Length: 400
Ligand code: SF4
Image (tube, rainbow, N blue to C red; front, side):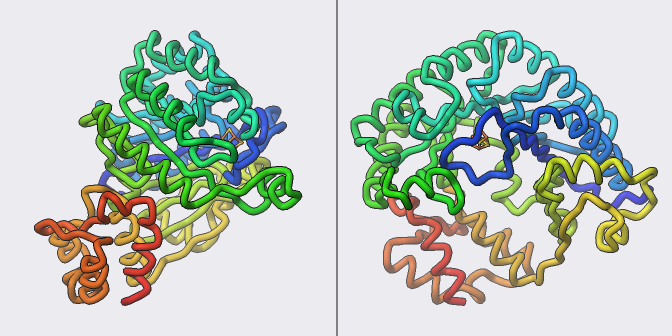
């Protein structure tokens, strides 16, 4: 086999099964397909084995099971996947192993099993501590279940737990949002991800809003709630390290930092994406098609790139090799999401040109407007403007 990638390579594994479809969700996730889980597991093990051989077992610093609902995987099947990963890749002894958990799917024994399998970080999809809000989101759990799941994870020995919350729901008041934030902070998780509710086309919530049965989120209210969160979490000892993410010192999500710092990763499983050696590719979205196609390759050939671009990996649905300009723009957009900002020296080394030569006048204008700040060799979104970071980044990139 030819070693094409000796640089660290993070792994994302997509588990697309859900117990029930939440009202706001447009992820690649499916309810009612549980019968497919064993075949899907076999296919994923096949994909892991093929990639491990094609890439000659590169070093892996982080592994992330996302979904969907990874905690719907029965422990024996998860164990088979993890055993395959350890056999196919050189996973660091101190690797971060994250798994997303829906509080409505787990008990204490499940968390103990995850610990035994080597999972060391839990991302718990709480979304709200208000039962009325959870019902409006069509979540399968209530606030008590979320709190119990958190306690069970702690009791099982997890010392790296993240909670997800959603804000800006219809009917949610600043006082109600503050109660959510205080409940979360009182649990003292190591990490928090906060997302403004967005209405995605084709979701049940979008249909309810179109029929007048629900109200759309209000941008101004969400902006105020974001500021509320920034103040409250700072006072509780959390550092905001990304537009939507806060952590205690040293507890930023190492896996997600790979995306934001323009690192390389391989996505495995239905609908997963990869960014590897200048190529981007995506796996077929349908879990049934993936289960069928990923089992087809009998033996991994020696060269991965001709195989990938020539359509020889049947479960890959698209492959592209973006022009340098697009790669560069995407890297700028991702790095500016981080509170640490864009490293101007690293940019020059990585791209062979100074940032100022490409974006200087647009950046100066945004600095003059108080939207960007330059501190030494770092360019950052102003902290009080992070809620509109996406607009600021778009302005910067459009002005080039
Ligand atoms: S549990 Fe998560 S992935 Fe599944 S439907 Fe709800 S929001 Fe979507």
